Amino acid sequence: MPDMRTNASDELRALPSVDRVIGDAQLATVRDKFPWHTIATLVREELDSARAAIARGASAPTVAQLTGKVIQLTHQFGQTGPRSVINATGVVLHTNLGRAPLSEAATQAIMQSASSYSDLEYSIAEGSRGSRQQHVDRLITLVTGAESAFVVNNNASALLLSLAALANEKEVIVSRGQAVEVGGGFRIPDVMRQSGAKLIEVGTTNRTYSLDYEEAITPQTAALLKVHTSNFRISGFTKSPDLEELVGLARTNGIPMIYDLGSGCLADTQAFGLSHEPTVQESVTAGVNLTLFSGDKLLGGPQAGIIVGDRAIVDHLAKHPLARAFRIDKLSLAGLAATLLHYLQDEHIDKIPVWKMISAADTAIKARAQRWANLIGAQATVEPAHSTIGGGSMPDQVLPTWIVAIRPHLTTPQKLANQLRTTDPPIIVRVIDHKVALDPRTVLPVDEETLIQAVRNSCGLGG
Image 1 (cartoon, rainbow, N blue to C red):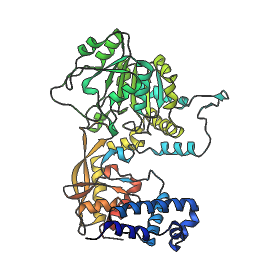
Image 2: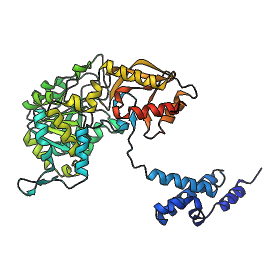
Image 3: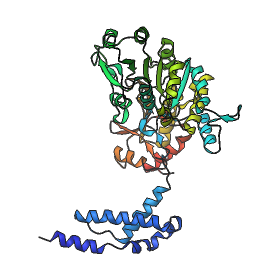
């Protein structure tokens, strides 16, 4: 039996030096673009990885293999991320793909804000320091009907700020069925603990009554909290109090009512064949003291946490130290302002991509799918399927759609899906019933020709 320690020693001695790898002719172009210390760091890291692999029984890499890896790494540096991808999955708000694509106006607003100085916190009229909230607060109150508004960087921050400002070392009552986990493993109870608030769960997972809240109220109660279960549904034998009941209970006891609405819907989803999704306007009308929602879900804008409600309470939140830690950046602020203006001008269905996708006509989707299939050829057929909303919004709702279903002749569906992810830009698809599925609903028109050509190339059709 060979001595593994001896073989490993031989392999370690065979490793080239850092200088030898850096001096290799293959790295000439890399040396012109990156300083010596950067290349040396990459080479040392590759040599460290090689030593670890040798300890597991691998052979020493050659100089050519090492330089090839370094060149590959430097090429990746040039692909600044996040990269643009083509979403052919049919998931409108795909969390892993950045959720809501922005409207043209929102994109232009962000580019303008990024490329020059701005009046981010400067009052042009008064010639003195201003507030970054001035760019969106009036738009938000006009669209939602709320008395006041405040924007932070995401909805988790909005909840944490609200609880920290109103319920530190006090109690907040929430239904046991609403103490939920949201994306990335973040849980509402954990967020509440970080705020200093004490969570009081009432009712059961599937049934909670207003009496459960009422019996739990004590002198230590700081607020009632309702959390919209926007990323899951409990159906069947269920019960939860109406929003108006909770608002009345909170008002009777002189404590604020907080509604974490999450999805940030400002439009009537029933107009597009979906079930009713609670809207921000309904929450405001019901008299909720604070309503919290996201900017990058059904609102269709950039990531943001939006707080609307009573002026006195919103002003109190704005003065809390966490407000600065959670403040929204200038680029998201610009994109949010442009997105809100679409609602104010009643053009959101035509201008905001999320709503254009949700409202897309069945006949238009089928026509796009048929055109794609004709260009792809015999490997492609048009079939009925379903799109989903995604992004922690309306989990039990689907939209009928038409997909291009591809049975590749030269490879497997999974290998074709993997290959499409390596194109530039990457194309993200689903595999359904042993076929690659392309859903036109979520493919932006500007990306159509790129997608079709990439699919043809990957299917061996070329041209």
